[in-house]
Amino acid sequence: MTMDISWFPVAGPALLRPTRIEDERGWLSEAYSARVWAGLGLPGAPFVQDNESFSPRAGTLRGLHFQRPPHGQGKLIRVLRGAAFHVGVDLRAGSPTYGAHVAARLDAADGAQLWTPPGFAHGLLTAADDTLVQYKVTGFFAADHAGGVAWDDPDIAIAWPSAPALISARDRTWPPLKDLAPLAE
Image 1 (cartoon, helix red, strand yellow):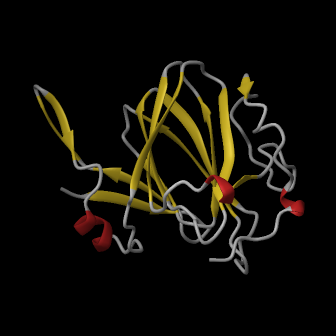
Image 2 (cartoon, one colour; image 1 turned 60 degrees about the horizontal axis):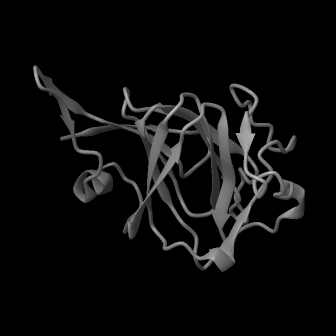
């Protein structure tokens, strides 16, 4: 099977669309293949953990989350049910696009996936009720290295498609980008 890839102006993240083979039964796709991944020119990504998040309500905001080195996480993100607007913010030390972001709407019907490498914060805003998201990650969760950046930081200027209806208390308290130290791997 194959996968189409689109790159963003910010180096590192990519939007991936697995090819679907369809017939009267529905469809089949290879959501991840190490061989295809390498053939697309993506960096080695030894995924070590799969995570899922479920949001029963449209308008739920999660993020913007990251892990500090040496526990950075690359994430391959896809929506299994529903839809969500996903964002990756470049926090890499020395990056010419530090503070810039990429964004993509992912939904179960389309099957597209977003890759964000280590050094990026990730966040999402659900666009449908009962949204289920899967994350393949390259590093184990390390609570003492977890952090975040304000989802509404004007210096990042994310054009969220709608105002969030539900945000956790923790996600309301993340600092602005100007108060963060860049992430160095």
